[in-house]
Image (cartoon, rainbow, N blue to C red; front, side, top):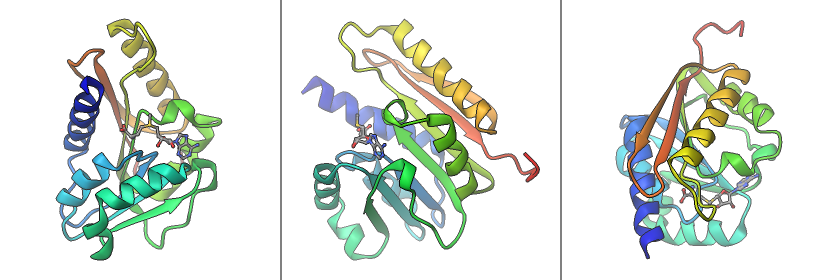
Length: 183
Ligand SMILES: C[S@@+](CC[C@H](N)C(=O)[O-])C[C@H]1O[C@@H](n2cnc3c(N)ncnc32)[C@H](O)[C@@H]1O
């Protein structure tokens, strides 16, 4: 129960940091039960929200949670893995992944590919609230450092870290796709 409340708080906080605007196009990778997708759809009211997850069960749960927005053609969910990204007809404004990047194969390569989907100056938010037994503030700090290093290696810029004081704390690492296309 405590976990569930903290999952909701984590997702809601991360979406708020991404500062999604009404007409934006946003992708969530590893959406799980779809809590953040619902928040994203509540912000991108005239935009589009896309989600991918490799778990069929999670796609079913998130589809139920976001049924109205899916029917309205504002939320689009795809059952696929992050190393088999679908194509998008236009560049994305923002990408979000909460408690997911740590599971990806070759995360730096995945982040490079995700960066290709973003418009110049598009944003990414990677969040981590470690769920291993005995996780502390230090566990979160180490997870944040890892996400930070991956984002740098994948060519993102303007990296900054924010922390939400839950138990254990949540770190959200935010970054931008450089406007300079030569990177
Ligand atoms: C711990 S859950 C987090 C769910 C949600 N983002 C949240 O914070 O509540 C991790 C999610 O990432 C998904 N995931 C893990 N590895 C993935 C991959 N390689 N490709 C796509 N989704 C993946 C899982 O299926 C799961 O739904």
